[in-house]
Length: 441
Image (cartoon, rainbow, N blue to C red; front, side, top):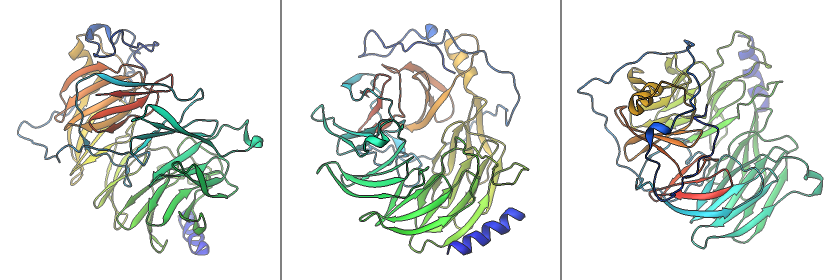
């Protein structure tokens, strides 16, 4: 099997924040209402003309067909689900802080949080896995797998949870399974090479990739290796993290070389692969940058540092290649794609024909809404909430657009957002800059 993939690869190779302050509100049960003071210290907007940069209004008679908002109760995958794609979440939209915990750790935390059975799961750079019960308002478990010889190493942990078992891969080369209810390690394996991807689970298989761009199929019950599939290795390590997504019977693997692979989950055989690295320098030291893969039904969306691709999941054929680079992970909702770009645009496009339905300048929308000079924003994430578009900014401001691209509200979260937020039971959950859990209703 390894020889087969090596031959295939060989053939292929030949061919800003608004301000500098945290700004916790004086009254944490309401949202700041003085709009004109919100954005005093915007960075000056760059006049550079890069990528797609047109304003396209939505046609007057166009109507989006959307699913009803989902009342989500758990967040077991750092990217929410197997496909990495978000749903249309419910949110109570009362703009009230209803819960704030004590500091959960003194160390720098991972950007992603998980939640299972109302238990918050986080990890920090010391290798601590921390489980906090929201119902009981207390830490119920704090576990560290590592011995003294790893004490001085900052640990980067990749987590996924299922049925009270947290599966972990790290930047040292370990993969292990920890039952946080029983406070017991089920198994642990040392693969020697640092892991560099999110984790996925399907049936009895756990999927992970290492920094050499090898994809592993692992028995989640025992930790035994089922398959190892090598792909192109890059000699220089970049900031892009290998990414995995599942859809039906296939696992999709985007590596740091810019190659997207589809493998059959049951047999580990390759269905197809394509390279999305647009550089003319096609050698293994070349670097690729992009966002996480998202998939939905028969389409995959990949946004690289140069283009956004819409790809057929069954064949790997590129259906549409658009001169747009998304700054954060986009969202597929029914037959539409919503994304924010590096040059500050909010875009909606049709997955069926690749045509842009609308394109609006977010910075201009803000300046018009607040009646202030146009400045530059920095996006953190985008979500569809109550059939509206929520754009979270790096300095903890929240922009609420309706689905047609009209800015309806600008607000500030009660405390600086430190992690990516999740939506649970009509509320927004995140850790602030003091590593406290906040729940905003």
